[in-house]
Length: 277
Image (cartoon, rainbow, N blue to C red):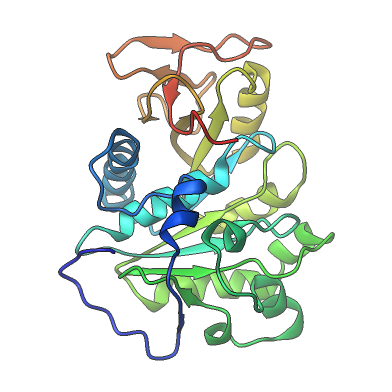
């Protein structure tokens, strides 16, 4: 299914095959297509990788202001698109420990995950899965936890992140984090990552929530905002993505700039998951 010049043999990591019909139903890209939806993620991939490589960063968080805005699908498709690059390998970590969803999206086989690693001491090689994509490995979330903020800020989690970042220097680690405004989880975990993407949803996310989410990211480098479920073409805004950002900008494909107004819902933004519910 996936064509690439790099050939990686997974000796200790479990492998499975993604189901094409399930991928289509859940709007998951295969990393090699040329349709508008896939090309949007390729554009996103290019901009993210440029920033990450320029700064020698290798740990990226994907989060949102609130639940249901599409962060998990953005994290999966961005990671898959990155892994399609010949010189890039990617590890996707489901760190939304209250509501882990990556395993279900990818239809991965049941088994232990991040929760079992942190609490039960399950070995790392027992939970990693290669879903049949060259250069792409998933660390699923495991069982849901109510004390997820404590687990994400624990010493064992900190040590795991450092190991994941340093084991393979060419690998990019993408963390699917919980929404920023509903729990303290993402706030507790943000010091462990180098940069973040913030996912917002057209017609749902309000300007006040965006500003609060950006403020909560604190010193984490905000690469930009991924604009979701809209009617035009998707991309990332990096024109004003730095720590002293006041109000995120939305830049459409034709170059128009729209500043969000606090308390108002997003209007003209870019399409990423128009038909995904």
